[in-house]
Image (cartoon, rainbow, N blue to C red; front, side, top):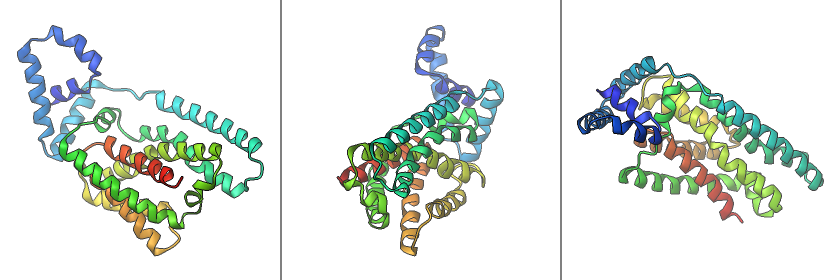
Length: 261
């Protein structure tokens, strides 16, 4: 019943409410027990159950990520043109750096196609627990502290307080949307290449690649990016979802910009 319990909890809450009246109390309890039993399994056993669910459901990939990405790119294009017209004095290099994060944010939904469809609801379920909230809180504080030091050498964020409101809004929007791409790639896709969760070696590889991908200019910056990725990996491993590390990353990125005002 473990795979049935997992499948039951993957259903939308509204769907569960519609189906529940047709089930007996004992059947509902059995499904909930099956899901709790699934949560207690080892990583390899969970992977087997998830594969069984995928084989029984034959889930198809949704077109929504592509649609969201296309809409995001169109809106980013309009913002770029508007910014070019209203802020003609800004240097081209600064403008390109400003729009880098919104472009990544627009492309981020496409990274959902890197993951099997049955994994998406598992990875983005907000499974709240006191331990997860505490770990996320302290790791987010550590991440913000790390980003403060990164900002000392990162030209654009360090100058965010001198940006006009339009430019700051663009930077802020990109800062809170781009983490979706990074979290899927560096906290799920790359780590799973080396094995099923919690795949510690995969997370170690992803931490190093995360730091390299940010093109650090000094060894200190490289170390800070390693530390930032480490905080996010801890949240990912402890919570067993992408929801909390994505939330932490977005809060830290947005928070560091607001602190610089």
